[in-house]
Length: 148
Image (tube, rainbow, N blue to C red; front, side):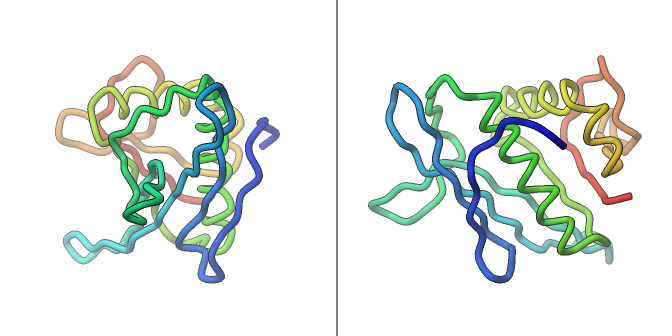
């Protein structure tokens, strides 16, 4: 995938990644964490994403940075998912925004780059109580991806 994205750093176990958003609000450290979860005997990794609060060390997934680099930030998160799944090719990654507006933002990013990412991963969306292959023009509530 050839998207303009920020330089990323990861922990040695590849469960946490960070990068800096750069724009009118300055440099803002962003963090992506993959947390193992289990539902009905199925293990998957939840993707958590947000701004790092320097004073608490916690990731805030409700902050709106508004650094005018949304597409580059989303491309960086997509790059991180691809990097993570290259190290763990058999896992499912689950993503849902912390608000419906953020989930919609993730969906717009997936839609924009679906042709590129679909070469590498299968993308599914949760709609009306069931998982189905991702399609444009359907408002999904959550997503998961798996390497092909």
